Length: 138
Image (cartoon, helix red, strand yellow):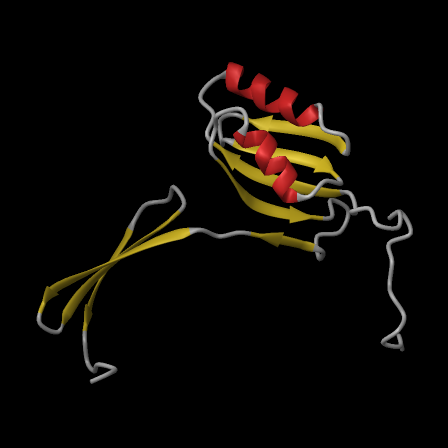
């Protein structure tokens, strides 16, 4: 059993340095010029090992040991909007995280009835009608 004072460290990790992780971003890109701009801006950063860009899905995968904020700033300096969608150890699926983003809209249709609509990223919207059975509050 590991005592509370014992720290578990990755043997490949240097003291004070971030581990090498695969980080994925959704980036608004329209053409090969966008791809070139994104790749060159990221590749000039110390700590970036590899940059892979998937234009058709607007995904940028970065292998490196930099903070997410540093990579996000480099992406946004190209004039494109970007958001984190996942990060983890490329050799161990269990040490990973993903981001799910969805938008919810709530409409009052008539007294006691609500219409709820949500989208998962770019997927087909889901629409549900709900009957309000009880309320909370005064």
